[in-house]
Length: 110
Length: 114
Image (cartoon, rainbow over all chains, first blue to last red; front, top):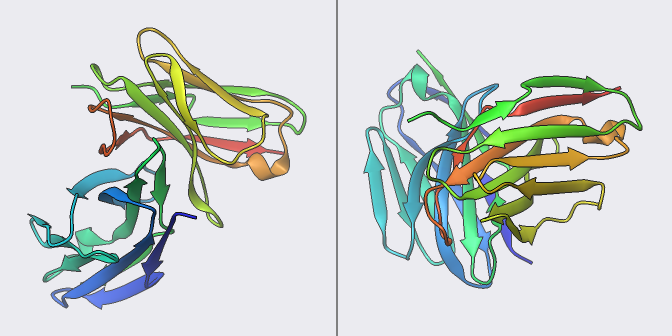
């Protein structure tokens, strides 16, 4: 069964303290892996799509990387406004379903 | 361009009743997906529609149904509501016709069943 697991469940950082979030996946065949950000009371906001192992994407303080088993979202010198839940999702071959992980809640303290 | 809109934003229903939620995708987007989000289960896929056809359905009972209209607007219906149906229902649309596709989410409809 296709599965997405994110760790840690929650992460507390000081402003400027860089870290990484992990997303490990088990799918029959990966078509694409996505990262989203969700603020409380809002729908998820699309950040990145990664298609194949070795690919990297960057946006401001965020950098997403992909291997054959997992993806990392690196956050460099985070600011309090980066506080949110970060969701990882995959599209597997053979369907039109998106499978989401449970998310990592990030708290950045000034 | 206007984002994905969902109506109503909040809804309170009683067990046994039925409910219809509406979603208008971003203009030009033909793929629309629905998700249920709860604190315990996270985001769970309900179904995906493209050109009025359901292409995929998640593991939900038959009480959950949906449809898409020719203008890509979509509705989902839940009949015989149960307390466990209380959740945030999210609609998302995509500019691509085939996966893998990024999705753009609406603000959701918060359904409370009492």
